[in-house]
Image (cartoon, rainbow, N blue to C red):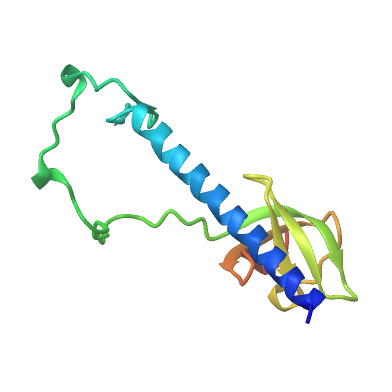
Length: 150
């Protein structure tokens, strides 16, 4: 009785797998042998700019810091400090869509655009009107509220 063709193919595939394993093992051993002979940087130092170097830093440039002077946490706010928040700002209406109920106001001080919703209006406004407004933190940034014409 002769062996079936399927068994022959199976044996050939197993031989190919075994050959691949042997080649992989040889390459691995070669890499290990080559890696032993080479030597890289044994120590790496960080200079004042944050770059890695192989030369140690100059001890004369070392800055001494007293550990007791380091303050951990946020300093407490004193009562006599004035808040740095301008309550009333002035600007110009860059865009306002009455049908959709929103628009944008450009601040005179920093030329930044702020979102304005119809719910934050005191007077009705149109484009290019001069207005006074206050800022309020919204979901996507600062919003203009209490908007009234000048």
